[in-house]
Image 1 (tube, each protein chain N blue to C red):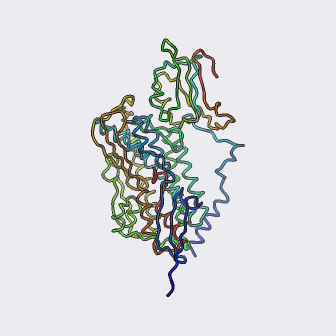
Image 2: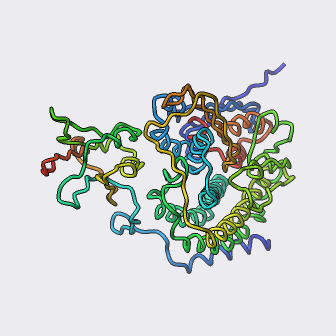
Image 3: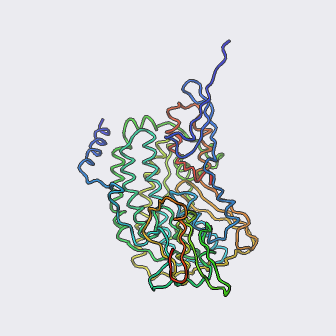
Length: 127
Length: 364
């Protein structure tokens, strides 16, 4: 009986504690800076710094990255397929120029599949 | 003469109280179980075959996904194999960081088990308490590595970046012992819990040997077998493998609670080393065009659910020729054939819960 009473007392103590849960979607918790969410091409410098070395494609486990080259061998556009991406961050970690960033955005639901393929054009015009 | 009739019952694969998609084909005589046939494979993702078409660095993030509750252990195994094959030595700081994260991961895994096990027995409150404490650890992992469960933090020859937010770990190991005391108050001597676990699902030592069971399940049957004692990562750490003589579900519960305390001790020692340690020195291996020399490689580690190991056969290519994982849960599932016979149907879930089975790990 003593064990039962002890247990009940411990459970009742929790009645007077602050709740630890959040009412998601209304309230959202703050994510850390290191969080690996939706990926974007880094445009901090005003232009994409991708040099088309292909390392991101080599380290990607799910084949989510593809790019197009013109006749001169320069990268014209590249795209991330978020349907295939497993958010491991390999592309971001191994990019020699820091051209790929992962944001804190994690709600990726949308109405059409095409919206999940992010294409970036080298001339500075984003899709 | 009357024929003895038995009833065949499918428990799972979509039963809400089974752990994941496990199907148990039970043969019942009244309420008693006559035979049990576990049917696995509903979660098979082809992790081993997948490796044959991927380079080592491509495969590294997927290794985290073999066991989603203890991802660190499997990426550590893969990293260790590559490091040993390449002859790369790890610095003390890298080793310590890895040990701390592995043990935090072990605590998170055991905490979830405590919650889920009690949920199987019908107690709901401990589940929330265990999840609350686990959340602290997962948030720490998110801060450090970027994700809560699929870390991709260990790399060939080191770690992604130096450990940070040490005050968070200090906070966790300060709070946890009190919380474990709370769990013990609620659970350990509770008469209902005792009735459902004491003397139930007895795992004899010879059965454990024959079924190649490892980990806490084996140690709760009185056999001291903990790979950590000889592991090169854990060199210099003082801890005692938890060995209990009970052999039943209750002993397996108690062993996990004690193991939480041991893990906290290991983390404390690790933090001491880090505080007075030097800067992070890594011998990173360039993962692009990484090729393992021709040969066969085998490495093992003590994961939360038993001995985990990896076998890689390389032909000198940038992809493994064959890769095989050994996961602890697979052997525990097999054990159900033996443990459930002669028990009541009501205890089937309680006993299978006590073995800590994680289906993604079983099916790979």
